[in-house]
Image (tube, rainbow, N blue to C red; front, side, top):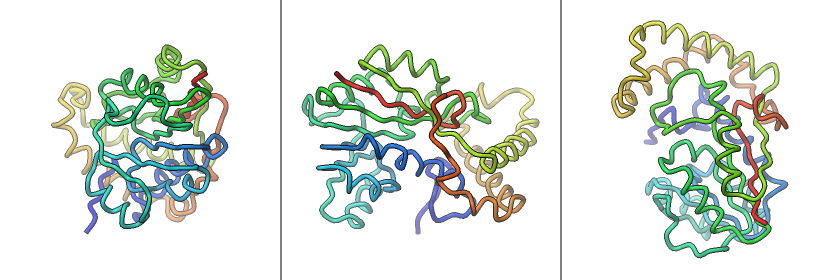
Length: 258
């Protein structure tokens, strides 16, 4: 039986639908930039594999979880999935790929500068990387699974020190999405009012993960009951790609190598 954490949003749990659709949108939005030999860093359970495969000459998917890789090999026979803990990207030569995508990964990486430097190294001249990550401006509480989250300019500054061009965009939301986000914010605030000592920022991440999982799952189920079919009816189309990253729930950046 599959085990679902709130950090790995499921396409099978109704209460996870809004976040699943938000994550799926990154793959849809990336399509115009997908070409040639493609590497996906952090493919997870393969949410976007079917979106990307037809657009690439070759595809390699990396993830750190062995069970996920085994599942994907069974689901997509003949596709090159590999288990890897990164960075560095051992076994990948310089200038190996035309396109690299990595969605909701960099916030988990301790050495984020090395992560981006390695992506730049593996890109061919004229290649591009497409990355997404939560916009901390709209984050509702500390996520103990994340090493850090970024303000839009912080990630722009980091990427500009490595890449030759940065096109900064965001994954936004329509009125339906922002109504759900506001309901979520109010619900989280009700929970966090008991954290009078600000333990979410004082305690080690390892201590916070279990209570975070429990409370986050309770909260998503509660929102599903309160919001009803609006939770189910949210689709990736409700998350538009926006030119101003400040307006994005997620940052969505295209990073270029000359």
